[in-house]
Structure formats: structure tokens, C-alpha cells
Image (cartoon, rainbow over all chains, first blue to last red; front, side, top):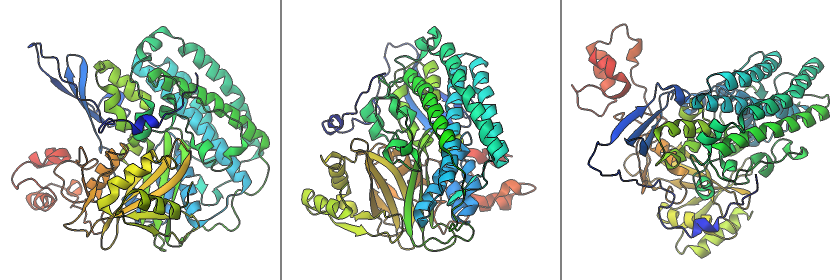
Length: 396
Length: 193
């Protein structure tokens, strides 16, 4: 994989409307007519309750309308009606595959709003848990993708075997496998014991072998390559313009990783590379996740080596009854699915005046129609799977 | 990146007649923003995206805010090419009731497409120039804007022992379809029963 730099000059020279999906006219051979299919909300490939209204000319997709809202519970309204701390467990339910990074983004936004410092050990714990989360998210995402390609079970079970080990670590540290509610404004809720760190080191030592095995099993598989290469191509300039982030953006060759750009937390202390794709197709998105898993292992090894004893909560941290000064803050992190941001406006009261989640899953779906136009309907399932969404975050 | 003061003067030099104010943020986050007049928003947005020095090619986040006397849309801009940001733009509607139009920035940044639809849905800001302005999360035929602070929740007749006429009539006040017609969307089954 080589580095392709994103060329913004291309954007400036584009005609009006270049960033809209193309209009495809059906072939008028007088035979048959357009068929409209509602894929979802109860469709095994939709990862939850999501609907795509697809117009088909034969097998070819000529229009695709995503329909949202089946899991909408107005998370933002709920959060505006309660204290800052009370929203922390709710953030677990946004992207329920990666609760730790949701906690982290929210804690980061509140810390920006109040100007709180985070002690060093807490930062290390955040990085360790965040990278474990990224690892298990990418592994399961690849597992789901291959499942949709017809590899029933095996790769997904391999991925879930590793995920199980990571979730056991989460359970031991936080008390819950998925709904962890672990971070606090100014630190983390509980400290990790030396035994937990040792067990984490042991698990991390086994992850590299898993990635090698997974890589050998899948990356040069003929069926996987035939189904994914050249399918669902996303051009880099459209990806940037449409706000696509995360592995999907980097698969299109755009070098933008918020861990590097913002260097939030202590990420600028670690050595890691940002893998970039060449073609922006489904295969590149698959491959970027595979390579990011390897980079995550590297970060984990460095963090587990460097972590020192110390407090996990800032002594000046105010958590309960928090009343930030009037003002606003936007905090964002590189979540496994893309840029996860929280935008908070405080009016000085105990509840946020405005609480906004910037969901990577929803915004990455903006270009779903552009990628799916003209492909066969069977490939829509793969393209959709390669976006890697969670409906809890899309519909909020 | 340039400071907001410098960006303000750059905008005023490049877009004649643009009204730009700095909205300070008295808060440790140090994220001041620029309040722009809706009339010049498209020209300002185009300038910010295409300017050689700024190149704010990535619109990250669009937020709707309900203030006591107006509705507001907040845009968080970053640059992927220059790796800087955020620059925060804000636009206000005239009031909360009948003059709620703002220009859509979707023609400039596609990432606003779903987010502006969401704000139209939940706050009721009408984005003129949006290519496909429909409700995003609530169903078609729903009348109110749930994120507004004065929103009243509909009667939750799913928890009534039986969905009798009086409850259905109260619930129908939140639908735009004519009385007597079946209620579209997820309440079809209850209405038909």
C-alpha cells in the first residue's frame, strides 16, 4: 500500500454538484420494469434496524435511499434533561461494540469544557482500553464482512474468540463486558491492579498470532478478492467532502488520523503508523482494518511497558454536581469507526444546555448511495458491511 | 491556523458585504466562533473551503441549538489538507416560529446533508437549497420538532390498556394527516386495530 495524497485542488476545479450521486437512467429495452426493494429493516445484512430503499434495473442498483430512525430514542434530548455525569452510562449505548471510546470522547469534551487535567496513569489506561476496543471492533467488523460474503461463521467465530478475551478483561476491570461506564471527567473510575495488567499483557501477546492467522486465512482468499476488489470505490475528494472518517477515509488514501492530527491524550508519545489504501474499494477497507489491528498491538505493547503507578483520578476533579462555566466545547477522538465528537454548550447549570453527538456511523453513510450506484444488488450488502456501522449510533 | 480575528478580516476582504462577528467563548476550551449573516453564508463557506491558506475542506459537525428567541445552526470546520481546525461558524434564524430559513451548506460540504436533515427534523430549521430536505429520524407525517425545548411529548398510548378512541384522537394531534385516515408509520397497526 502506498501513500496517495489527497488533492484538494481537484475540489476547487469541480463543476457545481460534483459531490452529488450520479443519476443513472434505466436501460430502456422495453423488457421488464424498475423494481423497488426495501432491504431492511429486518434484513440480516443491515446490522440492526436499517432500511435501504433500492431501485433495481434487473440486478443493477440505480437508486438507493437509506431510511433511518428505527432505533431513534433521542439520546441528545435525554442527556439535556440530566446532569453531566448521568449521561456517561448512556454513551455506552451509542456504539455498543465500542463503549470505551464513547466514554472517552464524552469525558474529553467535558474536560475541555471545564479545563480539567487527567493524571498520567489514567491516560495510559484510556489508551490501553481504547486500543483493545479498536482491535476487537476491527476484528468483528471483518468477521461480519466475511459472513456477508458467505463465509458462514468461521472467520466471525475466530474474531469473537479474541473479542471474548478482551471483553473478559473489560469485565474484570469495570464490572461489565459491554456497558462499561468506566471513564470519569478527570480520570477513570477504578484503577487497574497489577494482576490485570499482567493478564492484559498476556492477551496482547497472543493477539499478533491471531492477526497473522486471520490474515493468512482471508487476505489472499480468492473469493474474498473477487468479491471485494474494485467494488464500492470511494474517491478521496468525495470522501473528504462528505465528511467520511476513520478506516473508510484512510482506505481512500487520505492521511487523516485524529490520533496523529490532534494528538489527544498521550497519543503523541507512541510510535505507530497510519495505514493508507490505494483504491478506496471494499478490499482496501478490509485491509486497512487488518493493518490497524497490527498498529494497535504496537501501541498496546508500548503503553503496557510504560505505564507507571499513580492516581487515576485528578485530585481537583469535580464529577458530581458539575456546573461548568457558560460556554461551549467540542471534543473529538478517533473512534474505531471514525471521528466521534461531543459538542456541549453550558449555560452554567447542572445540565448541558446542548449536548450533541457527532456520530461517525451516520455521516459515513452519506456516501452509501454514491458507492452503490451501478453495482449488483448482492454487492450492496458488502459495500454496506464495509462501512462498519452500529445502529445505536446512527439513530441515537 | 490563523486566529479568528485574522480569519474574520480575510473573509471581509474576500467576500464584499459579508457580516461577520466574533462570538467569544468565556471557557477553558478556547474555541471562539464566527457568527455570519445567513445572506452571505454560501459565499463565505465557499471562500473558507477554497482559500489557499485555510482550505477548510472538511465539515465535521453540524448542530442545531434552540435559543429562547431564535434557532441556531453551528458548523465545525477542519482542514484535512492542512490538518488544522476547528473553525466554528454559527448562523441564527430570525425567530423560532415563522422565519426559520437558513441557507444550506450542503452544496459546499456534502457532509451536511444528513446532519441538516436531522436539524430540520428535530429543530424545524428549513435549509433553503438543500437537495433533499426530508425528516431523517422521525417518520413522515410527524408534525412537531422533538429537540425544541417547548416540545410536548405525545400521549404514549402504547402503555394504555386499550387504544381507545379518546387516546387515539389525542395522539392524532401530533400527525399531519387528516382525521379519520390511518396514521402512517409505526402506529399503523394500533390505528387499524
